Image (tube, rainbow, N blue to C red):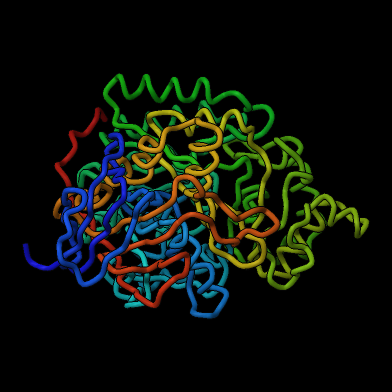
Length: 541
């Protein structure tokens, strides 16, 4: 046999299929895997001794927002390293309806507003999937596959207006989506609690999901409500996918807010019934009881109807606007997930506010009380001071629901990572190692092979990553070497970027990107173009 570029020897392979581990040597040649009998002693330019360790495929994080992590300063470099250190070799980005493409040149400003208010400046927008892929350059250490955001399409075509799209506008959105999917985007995403996606009717989303189905790519949705109305929101998602003939991926499935605790018993049963009825449906989850999003998403959607600058001006200067916000938080708004109304400002903690670092780590309720003001007044003033760029944590879920979703055979793993400074959610740096250490080894909720399948083979199949997700001959040489006895998350809410333990080595494209827990200078990552798959059969109109 010709000499290998690298050989991982002495380890037990967990191959990503869900099958039990087995002793196998894993070789790499020209960026591809070569599986060998244990103790093969095949000649290799580099040898990694994995005795007593486990070798797995590289982990695939099915829900991140790292496509919107722009800039090259030191803080952003630290953020980029966090997923690598826990073994994530591929990320699916463009989730929750927000992607930086495809944006017609004359409509970049509304999309930049959307991105900047949610993920902070600098906010880049690209005309096409190809432009987005080219812009990543040679700077990446791991791979990206990118969804097309419905919110981006709507911002580009309709703006933030609170109205239904016209047939011509829906067609324009479908045309933009079709071009991006044909070029290699991985699917369609929606964020139906966020503006401008919250303004869309079910018929609009069905039309777009039909385009995804025609390319054999999934409809991926942050449901219209994940709290007290989660069950009706799930029915809408099932209706959309069934009518469109598309596969359905329910993002970061949860039942949040005390009124919804325990509802995963019913939502998971509904997903299982839909699958039994013939719908290709799966979901994902992050292993924490807190979520994270933009502060402006806590406020009623009418506030952003005229765009982000108008929202900030009105919230900062008009007492009547704040009074209306208070009324709607107490009474609710039809079709809007009211996080504060379902929980309270005492559960909303500031994660990132670059101009007000002393606010980070504290709840809106406590910050307002310390200043002797109403929480709505404080939230509006903070948004104005930060130009809309405030990220929060929402402590709103129950551990029993998290475990129930994580254990479901329909579920794969995600971080929903929002890579921002301050005190970001620890899920960005800890999700995968938390599952392997806490939920596999310590709690016994999952076995190792099953957990690895949720992180590798299952997401690769869902998103059409044909040569990834498994340790098999000829597959891309993305892999992780870890110690199952010591692997653990280090990230906490107080120290959210603390590195994990037990991940010894990570390879991307056959090159070592993590060695002994340290990130190397290798940058083999790229944006993956996902080809069309067998065309789905459209559902009834």
